[in-house]
Length: 95
Image 1 (cartoon, rainbow, N blue to C red):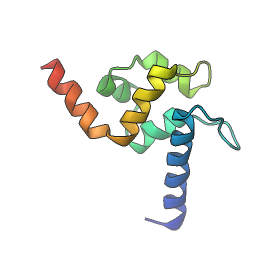
Image 2: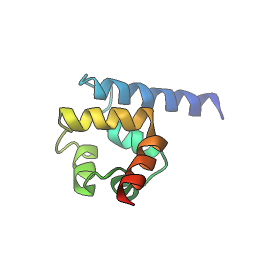
Image 3: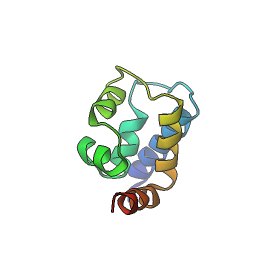
């Protein structure tokens, strides 16, 4: 991994952390939801399916049309911290 790649990943994680705290993002407008989704290597539809979030909500959040409410922000924070565990618990609950 190059230094630039690592710095980009760290910047994205810092943005996700700021977002879930309700803080404004610095610099250019971009979506921490998109940063999280891309960090996990998922398309919008795959992220929606994996975590039980409507794909339309993800699109709206990423494009800045709407923002996640407090509950959604808490869920996104949990996904950021424990993505595999949350995905596994959703698969278990659906079975």
